[in-house]
Image (cartoon, rainbow, N blue to C red; front, side, top):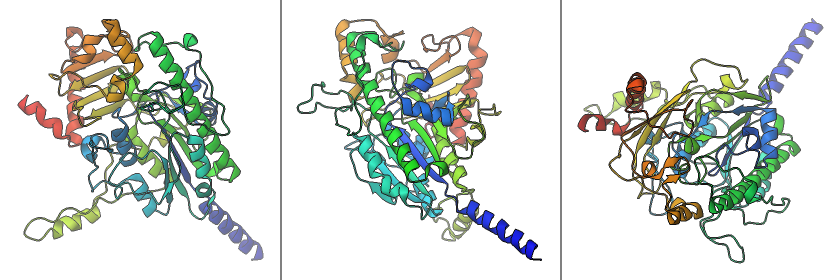
Length: 487
């Protein structure tokens, strides 16, 4: 009898110990960073801490944002909904003033309701705060991500509840202006703030391999060197944050996700649905995964981030927000229905793919872009499969609009002065004035130069992808679906 009681006691202790193990989460979002890291095969930039995280976890080779624009992408990351459904079509700050709908159920709010402490550090760039409410704001400036990491120590060390830390440095975003006493030109990259504990890595401009979608010019090489320097600063902050997790005894209980909001801040990448704009880093290290140092070819999307994190946190269901009262019964039926209806995300958990094995069904992602700045109306939709990409330019009669920082960049201004007809491999005219549809065979044309939308040989592919893209718009209640009717 005593042995039986002892066994029961040990079992209860083991279960309580397991249940008490926190399931912490760190979501690290770099700013304007493409797949430019050693673990992604870029030999020019030094990212030792991200490379180490990949060796400890899973590197996703085919991960995509839905819209290559800062505020818009961050609203997708935190809501699991495409922008045409969450309402946050573009930038939050200044006169742009885009908002998410009040009905959106955001990741920090859901986690708070489920027993998590939540905090954000650095760039926020979404609104209203009531929709994206965090319990704590870590003090500090996003241009100094090492200080942000140090400022997170107290929050991370608290073991009273599991935590969610949303960590968002401003690097490697362009700084947007010169810094007094610093030699960088206006609109250089955010690598001017001193960071105690970090020595900046300087990159030799002539030794850098210029990506094929950019012009190989001295101006572009100089900006790439600054961009890589800022990436290494971002990587140093990741390393410091991981050190703090280890020092506080939280590392082994923490899911770490490293990603970026959109691609690098150059014309041809940021604000476009071309590969350099939407194909981004995603490195995930889970305390639960059985295989480490693996890579996954699953096509994952930023609408999947919120469902994945909720899956890890053990949140099985989110209820839909109350419906607006209407009808003769004062909305009683609608309110009753709201209790019974699960809130639906556009994404799903990619935890089943984390061991690197091929999982059926992860073979397509969608893009949905509306604005960047308020002056940049250019809605685009795309479907991207393992081989093909179809882009629908809904405002194709308009010239393609430029983000202010991209237009003012040394690379683009130098290009304009040169009078060259090609920007990288793409004819500049094709970049500035686009047709309604663009179809690319990414296997044979990874730089997306040859548009096959009018190719008779690819008619079946075009029609299939077009039908799937339209079905996606219908399924996600895209307001722009109306353009199929009146155009």
